[in-house]
Amino acid sequence: MKHSQCPILALTVLLAGAGVNAYAGDNPPGYVDFGKFSAPSSGGEFVEVHIKSNLISMVAGLAEKSEPQVAELLRNLHLVRVNVIGLDDENRAEMEKRIKKIRDDLDAKGWERVVTAQKKEEDVAVYLKTRGSEAVEGLVVTVIEGAREAVLINIVGNIKPERIALIGERFNIEPLKKIGRAIEKN
Amino acid sequence: MKKARKPEFLITIALALLSLGLSGCFKVSSDVGALRDSVVKSAGVEWDEQIEIGVGAITLNLARAGLALVDLDPEAKAALHAVRSADVGVYKRRHGREQLKRTAILAAADKAMTARGWDRLVGVMNQSELVAVYAPSSARSARNLKVCLMTVNENEFVVAAARSDLEPLMEIAFNHADWHQKARPPL
Image 1 (tube, helix red, strand yellow):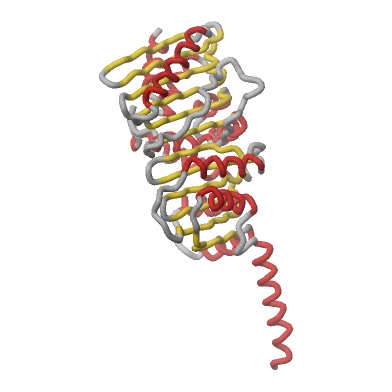
Image 2: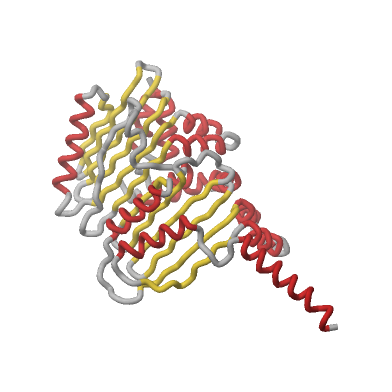
């Protein structure tokens, strides 16, 4: 996991839209409430992106002409949430605990863990919430990158499995590119 | 001669003032004002206004007419045509070098903007800077979307808003999408 601020800002410019309490009352199946995060007191990186469906569909309409595939993908997305929290001595233990709890909750709620990768200092887990074999209703990426940062991504929608690679490509999320390629092969 | 010119001169002045008034010159919008006030109140330090300006449709049309004579890059022209209004305020810290309470500033800005029906799209904090971008919760049309932005560092802060037609801007963004993909590292 490299510096994530630029891609996230770029993603936001492309999608434009937000709201931390979106879906508070009526959560779609693929939505995961990560809770609120605080910026690290040492002044490390802290990024929050929360993009709601109204602005996603707005951008989908605009992308129709030049990027029909992307437009179709966007039209089926309801929410994109990204949190990047810089880790320091004060919040590292707490963040690791929170991410473990999120992963345990997803396991308990029947989300399918499609990627578990632990190498060197990187700990990645990717989960999918599927509706039969026809659609992915939610996607969660959790990453703890050693001592540097934690990343949480939740993409909610009605996503065709074969489109996951496109999400990975367009949003430049490496684990999703790999999952997508694996799905396309099968 | 003098008597004949006076009413013309007065009418010209009146029209100019009317244009400035209608175009929103010299005054930032209430949304940008609310964002500015939230930073000033929550930061706990004193700021000096460097510039505060708002330009509306008439001023922008005048600017476009003027720039039509200049050989501008077509994308810059398209971007300029997309903008319907813009406000910006720049404020410099008066004194003190102690670190700002960025979390408190972001919380205050969120509160002020949420109360006005805005959602935060992005919040970014690092050691030197705080950036937040807001859009109206009720936004439905890409042809006339207003976005507010705030950026704060230890020495100054900027609040800005722009109302624009996203369509030409998106076209520019998509034209550069491949370049952007290559330029940034993956998540």
